[in-house]
Length: 158
Image 1: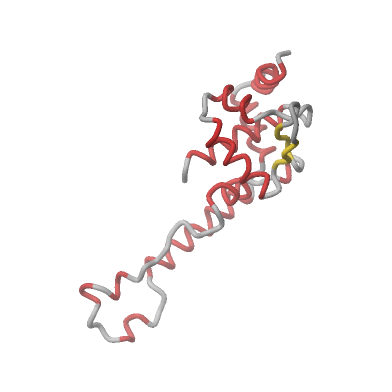
Image 2 (image 1 turned 90 degrees about the horizontal axis):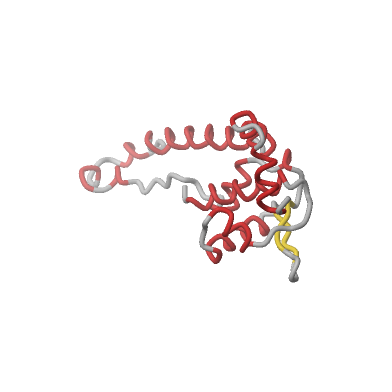
């Protein structure tokens, strides 16, 4: 998983702590997290395309949450940034090399490696889908009380 998911989660958390106030620009987020603006903007545009963020144009424009934080799952974020494709892709190497001359019946069933990886990925996706941005926000606030106030102050100057 690329670092874009981490960046997206922190941006979404920041916006959740801002409670729907003024939109925040890519430049402000890039400065706050010391990230390259152009690459961060690509991640934010992916979140807009997925319906997780709204993009507001103009000098006072920027990004804000497109829906409540309790309706944004971690799976939504991962899919928006990484795409919906499976993480594991079986290429049937069992049919090459030493398996090249094996009888067809050896390959009638799904590859055990593929089915094991699919089960693991399904469990991972279900776990991500079961957690929301609101859950992550609550956990962050338990670990670091006052973090929301600090983030809000950093973005609003108050």
